[in-house]
Image (tube, rainbow, N blue to C red; front, side):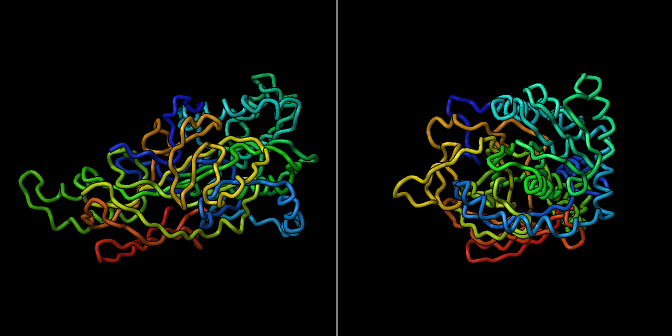
Length: 437
């Protein structure tokens, strides 16, 4: 949806006071099917970032040509059994229904496509992971001369029928296969893709967008979305802890506390996808990774490491960390540096200022169209991702919470994500490891 013009939108978070074999994320209080995404080939996680905004000079992009040529000469990565299971999971219409019914998601993309109509009208577009083809159809409605709708899932068969039913077969060409394998015999002007998974990078679909970019995108072409940012913040969530663990202390008058260690393991071993509110967040968020879709590389996405330091805004039990993301739909314009201003303080296209790894709101942030999954914004099917501790840690107001986070591709399956957290507060240090699978 369009970003509000009343100054109410905040990048990150402004603090005021059915599982398949391809993906089995715990989802708070309900079972979810698969993460969400589309035809993806080999993917990855994401490297650490200083959170600085994008400053794109086309000359810098041109300097990557030699590297990209080498990448194109490498053999195509094979389609693994995990890839096959992943693609098969997206043949189920229920996943696409959930995504399309997410109005914040779908309307943001539709609005972004028509907001950038001058880049799309009369041009060639590739939709990476087209699913049912709805974004491809939006692009055709915006005047695209030709749209290549690519998907490795069998949902591509239905997408082709939908294209025919809307009399768009002369504009929209559905290609059933991986981006790594299909052939497009011309350069494209625009790439559109809804590639974001839970915690932004789960599913590793961004790698397919990079592959499409390096194979087909013309110099100066448009990528929607253009920028993505992953955030983290400490949270308190006594209700969730109570429902999952403390419940066992007294069950119909029976002491069942012996099961509590197992309950903690079952409830909190893996990341949980659920919805939290602003009241759950203990501090300002911090940027984990800032992704520029015009320049990010697949190698860069294999592992992320970032350090964090928070100060609690309240006295509360500290139950874990929450993660969310936003994406920006901006054109491929050159953004000059502010004279004399260090890069970490350069104004981004969202009218936000980046202080180190923290993002804070600036007045009238009305320049960019943004899709946010922050706790204070309208809920989306991505919700937020929570990494809970087995035991909460009591923190005082202004108490420092610091440590490091590493996100990396699982060696078991590149679509899974390893999470390694080291954190300390109040003179105590801890390690939390989990896998998003």
